[in-house]
Length: 248
Image (cartoon, rainbow, N blue to C red; front, side, top):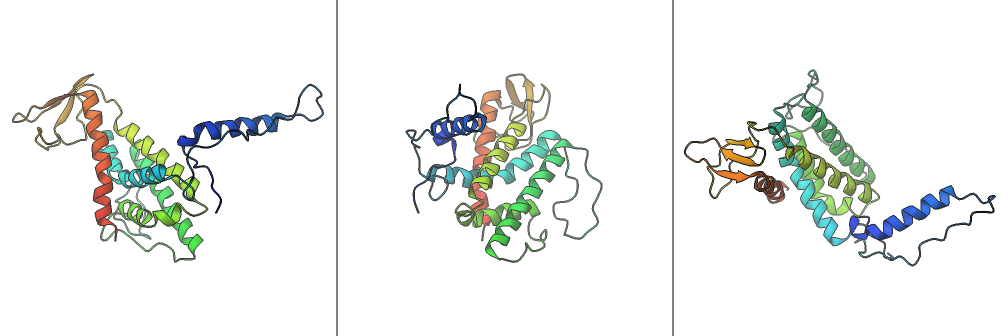
C-alpha cells in the first residue's frame, strides 16, 4: 500500500493547501479570460504517514479518547444534574419512556445512537451478525464503547477509519467542554475530591469564580479552577486503563 497523509491536524498545512485548491478549482470559470486554472499544491508534503489511515500518534489518541467517553458521560450527567431518558440497562424491545427534557440526556442519546450506528456499520462491513441485546452485565453505552475499542484496529484500517476517528475526537471535545463548563459560584461539582490530599467524596463546590473548595468539614481542600480542570482531564484519561481491563 502506498503512503498517504494522516487526516489529522498533524498534517494541517497539507490539508489546508489542498482544501484551498479544491475551492479555487470549484470557483474557476474556464470561459473567463481574466482567470487561470489553479495549480495543484504538489510541492506541499505531509508530515506524518497514515498507518494505514491515521498516524501512530493519532491512532493512540483515538484509542484513549474513545475509552474516555464512558467516564465523561457520567461526569456530564452529574454536572448538569440531569438524568437519562430511559435506564441504560433497558433491553431492546421494551416500551420506551418519555424523553427527558435534560439537554445532557438528549446529547447522550445522540451519542448512544452514533455508537450503535458505528458498531452496526462495521459488523455489516465484515459480514457479521447484528449486535446482541445488551444491558444485563453492563449498561449499553459501556458495552458499545468496549466492543468498539476491542475492534478498533480493524475499524481504523477500514473504509470507515477517517470518519470514525473524527467522530471520536469531536465527541471527546464536546463532552470535555461540557463537563468543564463553568458553573456559577456555589454550584456543587461532579468530580470527587481528588486524592492524595483530598477526601475522595463528592463534596467539591465552586466557591468563587476561580476557587474550588471541599465542603467536607474534615477535609476543606482548596484548589484553583485551573487545577480543578486539570483533575477533570486526569479523570478522563484514567478511563482508558479501566476500560481496557473490561474489554474481553
